[in-house]
Amino acid sequence: MSELSDLYQEVILDHGRRPRNFGPLEGATHHAEGLNPLCGDHLTVHARLEGGRVADVRFEGSGCAISKASASVMTGVVKGLDGAGVDALFERFHRLVTEGDAGGGAELGKLAVFGGVHEFPTRVKCASLAWHTLRQALRGGQEPVSTE
Image (cartoon, rainbow, N blue to C red; front, side, top):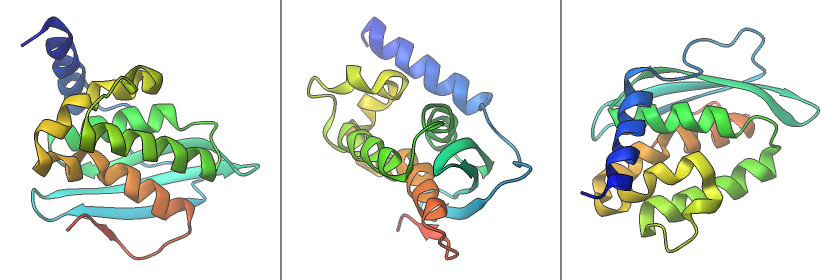
């Protein structure tokens, strides 16, 4: 394994063990629940929008290291974005976890650590669950998101 892969794996493990922005969000204006029944990931994303932009976002729940790490990193990088910005970033992230870096991972900053997920197709749903859930929350959806 390369040094870069080792570093990426360590970042994912760190965020999985000690997720950032974990817990309830007082004053949240948007919520959604997500479930990955294949591996048991279950989380709720809470967001507070101000002026159409994500002012704060947090998550609660349980899941595998990749799922929790993805939610942890996601909550840090989407702050300040509007819904279209979240969608655009998700599209780039989703390409990364399904197709690999292809030279574009560097533009994703911290999210680039998930570039190796594409080598494990069953883990793509783990990595993308928080993103699908956040997008559902921003759209005001009440139905739980499932990655089945």
